[in-house]
Image 1 (cartoon, one colour):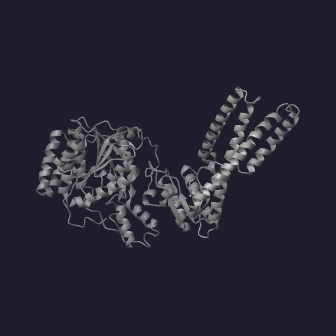
Image 2: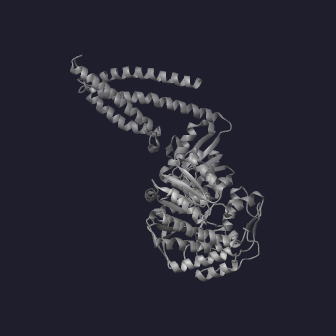
Image 3: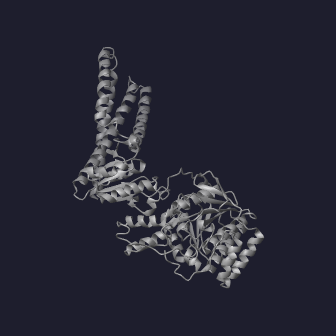
Amino acid sequence: MALHLRKNLRNRYIFLIDVMFIVICVFGSYFLRFELGAAFQKYLPSTLWMVAVSVLIKPVVYFLFGMYRRLWNYASINELKGIIIAVTCASAVVSAVLIILAAFRVFIGFPRLVLIIDWMLSLFAVGGVRFSLRYLAEMENNTVSKARNDVKRAFIIGAGDAGALVCREIQKNPQLNVNPVGFIDDDPKKLNQEIYGIRVLGNLNDLSRQIDRHHVTTCFFAIPSAPGRTVRLASDACREKGISFQTMPGIYELLGGKISFSKLREVEITDLLRRDPVKLNQDNIGTILTGKIVLVSGAGGSIGRELCRQIARWNPVEIILLGHGENSIFETLIEMRENYPDLPISPEIADIRNLTRLEEIFEKRRPNIVFHAAAHKHVPLMEVNAEEAITNNIQGTWNMAITASKNHTERFVMISTDKAVRPVNIMGASKRLAENVVLNESKKSETKFTVVRFGNVLGSRGSVVPIFKNQIKKGGPVTITHPEMQRYFMTIPEAVYLVLEAAGLGSNDETFVLNMGKQIRILDLAEDLIRLSGLEPGRDIEIKFTGIRAGEKLSEDLWNEGQSLEPTAHPDIFKLNRDDLLSDRELTEVIEKLTTFAKEGRDSEIRQYLNEVIPDSNLVSMQTTDMFTV
C-alpha cells in the first residue's frame, strides 16, 4: 500500500511539473517567435560567429562525454515513441481548437509558427522530465548494488542483442547482486564502444588477462548462436581462473523463447558441442503445421517431447500425444499444458503394435500430420530382446503407416537413425526395414511419406551422457568400450528443428539425412564431462576401457557406400538417393516372416534372415557377455 501511495504521489508531482512546463513552453514559443523576427538581420554577424565556434567546440565536447562511443542501436526508444505520439496528438488537438477560435475571431492575431515551436519545446520538456526520473532511479539502484559486499563483478561475453538484454536486466534489478564490469566481444569494431554505459574491453583471447585486471568473479556467456569451440574457449578460461561461468542456451533451445537473464545456466556438454550456426528459414515449417492437427508417436520420449514443444509454437489446431508409457506421456502432457494453456493437447495411451487401437485413434482424431518417433532404440537391450525390436520398430511402423494412409493423413514423417546403415545390431536392422516400410507405403498412397535420418542426440534417455554423469557423481570409473570409439552427436533441439525443416521440404518418397558434422570420440566426450564437473580425468576420475560389445561399431555412417546425396534448400539437410529398398511383394513377405519368428522367439533365425534381406547387414549371434557395459 505504501509503495502504491508513493507511486501516486510521484505521478501527481509529474502532473504538476507538466502543467508548469506547458505554461513555460507557451510563453517560450511566443518569446522565440517575436525575438527572432525583425531583429534577425541585426544579429546576423553574431550568428555566423556562433556557427563557427560551435563547429569547433561542440564535437570535442561530445567526444569527451562519450557521444561517439555508444552503440545507439541499443538505446531504449519505446518510451520515446510514446512521448512523441502523446505530445504530437495533444499539440494537434490544441492547434485545431485554437485555429477554430481564431477563425471565429474569439481573439485577434495568432501567429501559427508558435504552434510548431510549442510542440518542439513540449517534446523536450515532457521527455526530459520522464527520462530524468528514470536516470535518477537507475542511479539509486546502482548505488545500492555497489554498496553491497556480496556483489558479483561480472563480464558479459557477447556485445550483441542478447548481451545488451542481459546487461539491461542486471542494471534494472539490483537484487541480483551483480555489477556488470564490461563486455567481451571478438568484433574489433565494438572495442571501446559502450552499451548502457558499459564498455567493450577486449576479445575472448584476452579474457584471462581482463579477468585479472578487473577482478571479475563471474562471466555470463550471451551469444546463443556461438559454436561450441567459442563456448569452450570462454569456459576453459574461467575454469583456469577459478571463477563461475554461466551461459545462454543455444539458438535452437531459444527458438520461440525470450532471451533474458533467467535463461542463463551452468555450462553443459551440449554447449561445448554446438555447431556453427546456419541461417534459420522457418517458412516451410509454418506452412505444414499452422492450423493442423498433429500427432506425435513416442511423445513421451526425448525426441517426441521436443517435437511437441517446437510444434506448439506454430499454432496447430491440436497436438495428439501418442505413447505406450503412461508416466512419460503424463509428464509431456503436464509440461505442454503449463506452457501452452490455450492449445488443445490430447493424450492417447496406445501400443503401436495394436492396429485396432491405432485405427480408433486416427478415426477419432483425424490428424493431418504424423511424426513417428516411437521406437525401441537402446542397442544393448534390443540385442537381448530381438523379438521386441521386430514387432515394435517394424510391425508397429507398418501399422502407423497404413493407418495414416487409410485415414488420408497429409504427411507422415518417420524419425530414423544412422544405425540403419550397414547395421550390425538388431536395433539398426529393424530401423532399416522400418524406413523401407514407410517409403514403400508412399508409392501407393496420397499421403506424403518422408524419412529423416540422423545420429545420436545428446542427453536423450538411455544415451551415454547421463550414464557418464552418474558414474562421475559416484567417483568413477567412467567406462568406455574403446579409446577410438566415435559417434555423430547433435543436440535434441537442433535435431528436432531440422526434422521439422525436412518435413517442410519433403514432397514424397524421400529420405533426408541431417548434417551431423564431424564424429566425436566418446573418450573426448567423457573427458569434457569430467572437467565440467570441476574434476580432472585420470587424476580425480579414472577412465576404464571395457572392450567393444557385440552389435557395436567403432564409428557410424549416415548412408551406404555408393549412394549419393543431393543438396536441398537447407544447408544442413540432404536428400539421399536410394537403391537399397525392397519391392512391395518382397517387403510384405519379409515382415510376415520376421513377425512369425518374433512371436515364436526364434532369435537366431531373426538375425540370419535379417542378414539375408538387408545386403549390407552383418548381425552376429547374441553374446552372453555383459551387453550393458557403457
